[in-house]
Image: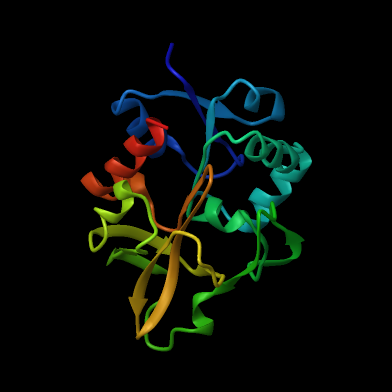
Length: 205
C-alpha cells in the first residue's frame, strides 16, 4: 500500500504545481485542511504558498500548529518549502504579532536587512551548497541551481545539516535537516531535475 503524503492547505494560494509534481513521481497525495485529516497521512508537506500572517492564523484556528508538532514528535517525515520552512521558526518580521510553529528557535527576517543592491523579492535560480554533514542524497546536489521566490530569510546559526546560497558575499540559510524534518527555502517542485530528486528522496523515506 502506498504511503499517503499530505499537503497542508493554508486556505490561500495555489498548491496545484506541487500536488501535480508529487503525483507524477508516483506519490499518493491528500490535501489537508484539518488535524483529523493529518492523522491519515504517513508524511506531510508544508508548502510555500501564501503569507506568514494568513498561514499562521489558519494553522492556529484549525489547531494544526499543535497537530503538526505532534506529528513531528511521532518521528513522521515532514518536508517544508519556502513559507513552510519559515513557519517552523518562532516568529517572523512579516507578522511581528504572530508566532510560528516554533520547532526552531529563531526569527525570520526581511532580506532588505542584509542585502543592499539585490532586488527584493529574490526571484530566480541560485546555486545551493549543502554542508558536509548532509545526507549523501543532498550532498550530491551541492552546487546545483534551485528556484527561489522569497522576501524573507531564516536567521539561524546551526551545526545541523544545512545549505546556503551566497548573495552580495552574504551566506543565506536555504535548508535544514534534522531527524525527520526536511526544510527548504527554495521550491523543489519548480527546480527541474534537482528538485525532483529531493521530492523523490522524501517520498522514499
